[in-house]
Image (cartoon, rainbow, N blue to C red; front, side):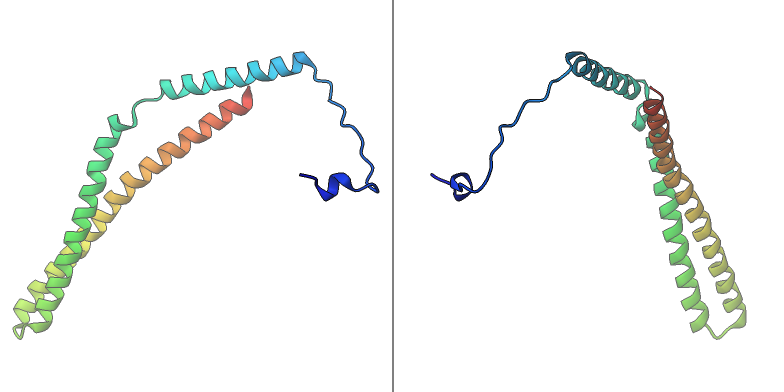
Length: 137
């Protein structure tokens, strides 16, 4: 098939000359790539297993989420019960229970944030260390 661009007589064509490649620079780049890959593999192999400490972190993060949810549920139930009660003593008891639910919600939220952010920051720190080691060499 003939292309209109290749058959156009008004277009000048110049042969493309191959660039001279310094064999030493190509070899050094391939050696550098291999050494970077091997360093990365060594770095990953030297890291502790994320599941070794991750199991505990996952459990505490889930525990914090459960405590937070239960605290919120207790607070809502206590508020509804105190609103429907006519006895002021029962209302005071339900309000105290609601405040306890709020405290449990805050406590569970702190536990959840500590362990979920701890995992995130751990991987962030590992990434920063790896980048710093990569830029040094």
